[in-house]
Image (cartoon, rainbow, N blue to C red; front, side, top):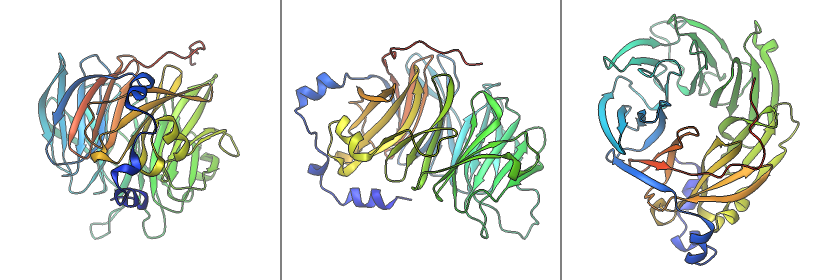
Amino acid sequence: MKSEIEKHDESLSDSDCSDTVEAEDINSIFPQCQHIHTESLGSKYILDLSATSETNPYIAAALTDFSCDIFKSAESQLAKITQLKEHSDRLVSCKFSQKDNNVLYTASADGTVKLWDLRTSKTAITFADTTLEDSDPIKPLSSFDVSPCDKLLAAGTNLFEGDAFILFWDVRSTKLQGAYWESHTDDITQVKFNPDDSNMLLSGSTDGLINTYNLAESNEDDALQQCLNTEELVEQLEWFWERQQWKISCITSSNNLQLWEVDGAEPYKRFNRDTIAGNIKKNANKVYVAKVHPASNSLIILTGSNGKEGKSFRSLQISNGNVNPALSFNENTQRVRASWYNEHTKLLLTGGEEGNLDIWRPDFLETNYKTIKRK
């Protein structure tokens, strides 16, 4: 479903998204990112992407027909392994296990999370709300994550009978382990485990709130640690590590970017749509923010323009609070809806509305301060 901003953007002409400088200046400001491969998945949107961490990874692409295509990357080519198609509604996420490259999780608005063993392409485990009776309506899932220890699953729901839920499962049991339902008052758009701490969870919602929880506490009231008010609809959240502490990036429904301290009363940095557009040398009318990725002690902003069939796609790099031009993705042919990045293998995947899965090899600049070893 498209947002009001996207509908407004589509009503504008391509001249509204033109570059603000000459083409030769764009080429000097934005070096071209190395493009490795494009795989067409047909007319389906790519809604989410995940991959394993090795140099030639397994890749999962969640599609609008409720299926998930699985590929193996090798020597700049992709080989399709299988298609997973057992969900009955829109996929909201797909994630590989951090402990086993053969294990993939998919979550859907049909109210279930499924664990797949790619060696058999069969569902090993289905997680659902086991407190429901057969005649009860399901709680549609809207977001999902798996803990870094690979033992705990968390899924956010749309507003359901007046409440928005975060549901929890232990991967060793299909029984629902518990739920939170008092911390948000609208659809939960994001749940994110801290990359280093399976007890630290982040959630965001269309109610405008970002919440952090300590899951080691026995109840929701005690677990809720911080409540940050963005004053906008929260679309995407990411944890990132900077200056010896965890911080939070938030993309809002207005294509604004906010950076938060975990205990901050307000964002310590804001980059609105106009600012982002100015930095990628575009008029702001059709600019969108696709994703933020932590990389090399900095943040990479993937951003583009809806004009010219969404082909314009560039990146910015934030370090020490400053934003600078990074790379241009000249071979991109679509509005990007999903991406995945591994800073160790320097591999970036993007997918979007034309059904193209693109593989890139970006060379983001190292920041000018030393890498901090996390505990």
